[in-house]
Length: 105
Ligand SMILES: [Zn+2]
Image (cartoon, rainbow, N blue to C red; front, side, top):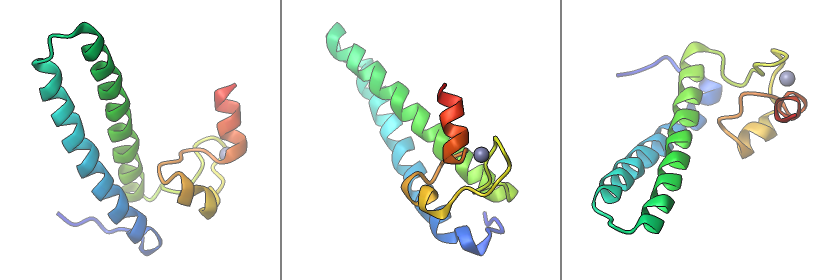
């Protein structure tokens, strides 16, 4: 399957694809592991890890979808461009810094 990826985002697209593979494999591992742990404390940790990993999978696949749609790198709050430095730190960022701060509260 090939998507027509904006050249500017080809590198980040490749990195996100790797990340998605890694997180998906990890999620599967965690899910399988949690099935056979009898320790309630341990399974609580597992659940937290699974939830966090699932969130990562969603964030990364969301970013890949936005790249495919040509919406990547644009703030969902103000429709402005998200600065490249921010995307370097947080490749799946959906908001610019001011809008992100508004999201949090
Ligand atoms: Zn914004």
